[in-house]
Each structure stands twice: as structure tokens, then as C-alpha cells.
Image 1 (cartoon, rainbow, N blue to C red):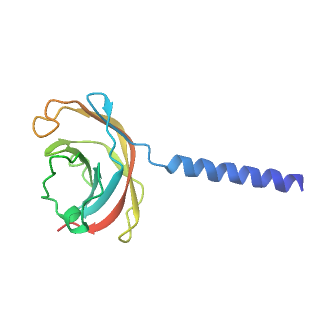
Image 2 (image 1 turned 90 degrees about the vertical axis):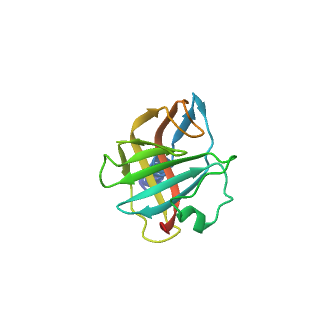
Image 3 (image 1 turned 90 degrees about the horizontal axis):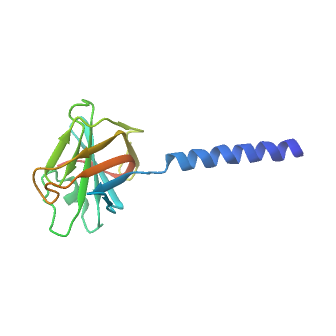
Length: 153
């Protein structure tokens, strides 16, 4: 009985460690202050995925699939663009795009509603030359998740 209890304890510890390790732990800061972008959406676009992080959830699925959608004045948005070509993979802050960002995807989603997880393999830091974040230092690191919303339009 003692061996069975010990074995169950070990299995529970391993399962807990796996669960904790897979939780998104991404962080985005603007001029050193963390910004909260709790809503993640993802669309398939060409050879990759756009993981869109927003400060609100007042957006339709049709709007999220529109890659030319403009952000509203009160919206904060950061997009991780994962591509099979690492030179195209990038972080997009408003309309400014930082190319050559190294990232990996855990699993490609199989259907709408699946969770996708993207990890930045290096810390990313840049100052956009245009948009809402112009001349502010954006720093991004860690793991981010989103709900898959289908193909871009």
C-alpha cells in the first residue's frame, strides 16, 4: 500500500509539473511597464499563424480574420507572426513590424477553437518608428496562447 501511495504521489507531481510548465507565461512591456493583453486570438495566414493579443474581447470572428483591420484608439494590440521562414517571423506593434524574431510553435491547431501556443525563444526588444507605440521600447518574452479562429480573409 505504501508503494502504491508513493507511486500515485510521484505521478501527481509529474502531472502537476507538466501542467505548470505548459501555462502561458508571456510578458509584454512598453517603456518598462507591463501591459495587460489577456485576450488571444489566432488565425492561419499563408505559411504561418498570427497570434493577436488584445486588451479587450469586443471583436467579431470576422474582424479578427481580417489582416487589414485597423486598431481603434482605445485598443492595445501586439501580434506575434509565426512563419515557416524565421526571417519573416515577427512581432507587430500597431503597424510597426520587427522582423527576424525567433519563435517556435508547440502544436498547430487542427480545428477552430483549439488552443495554439507560441514561444519566443529569445527576448525581443525594439522601438517602433510609427503608430501608437512610436519611440517607446517594446519588450516581449515567454510563451503566449490564443484560441484558433480559422483562416485569414
